[in-house]
Image 1 (cartoon, helix red, strand yellow):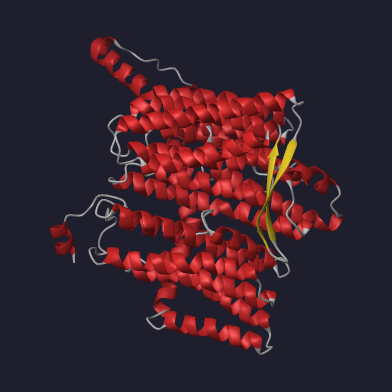
Image 2 (cartoon, one colour; image 1 turned 135 degrees about the horizontal axis):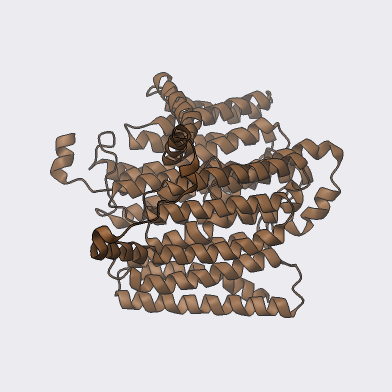
Length: 615
């Protein structure tokens, strides 16, 4: 069975790389390769499900070894498969196969034909990693892969500005709610002092000491935050209709069927933890109830069919949260399968439904009358008008999140810009080098580490607010990552290869990306245009820049991903504020890098004469 597990993880990744490399070949060749890999994946998952049931349908765990190990830290690869995982695994594989079969014809003659299927396989790989993960650290790897594939598919029509803007909104919400998983992993290290397997979670919670009660409560709320962001629950429901800018098949598999339920999977996987905390149970149920009400109202006011289906899916996920809160995890699992299949079908046929209605209207003319019955007609006129305004503005959730999160960060970053002039970066480098010598001299490392952590925050805010120079924004993110490693090193007090691993994953992408950003900056005015579309000018350089962004952001593609986890592990012995600062910096840096890459490479390409005129 272990070979089937390895094949379920490896086939989507191999398919992703191979289909991308075949992008310049004929569409028919790409379609045949896609069909072959899809068939292999479905057969592999089917064999795994049958064998799992035949062996008793019991929870199984495999130790695939150690991805990275040092004297004080290790990153194990545990694979865990139970009834929850098998249901999500089978549903994902079969619905993805339906989507792929549909898309092979639906996406005919699209310029990004191979890119679309490559991203679909990337998403499938991320979902399988998420489902098979035996620890929260490995789960976060799949969580990140699903997020970046969602960003790429929402911005699939990258020559237009609106899809790119909406992709950034979706990714920003994902990244903000990644705080829950990042700090959740840190809390797991803090409470259990080592990587905690999901197979041992129930017993670990049952035997936890009373002193850890507040820590378990905090961890439960972190998990709920991550689930709400990924599944579009209150107060993050506004991103779901904006994510429908991508192709209809990707909307079906992501926001109708699978990705929208990742939060439900996380809550099911962590069920023994948060369901043992009464206040977490009540808050989860309340979030689900508020989401049901607001999403139902917002869905009824949507002017497009994909937005209506998206809000309908969010409403059903809210009901699943209520089911989990009242103690029916199996019902929530059945509900997931039913809702995923229904929404996938509705989104796939939605273009045909719109065409059919238009044909009916054109043929019937004035004879076609629609029902005017609705529950709202029984409400007083003023209340009905107020509810419509609330629904039309989607509960003002986007404005609220922008007011509470985005504007303070931008205002603080602009304030940093006023203080941080040209010499600020040089001073930061001198301080960073001086920290190492001062720490070696025996002075208090706590104060020095705190200063380095403060410099990390300032650099992150500076990059977030930078709008005039792509080079300055890129360098600010690089310095932020550098200060993060220095802060933890100074507070930890002893050098290890964990820090070398982190710096080896951050420094090369920083300098290679700096070269590429300078290369693109020669032919664009970063401050005077929203998007520059440089991917059509040099697609290979854009790909290299994208890989550098992933490396610098700590995406599970290089050493920086494990390095960031190691930094959080080494911060366990210090105050919670250090882990919070590191997480804050990583989240803000990820949003800044995605926006920077999108602004350079995506969007409508400016003609050379127009760019000259702007400058």
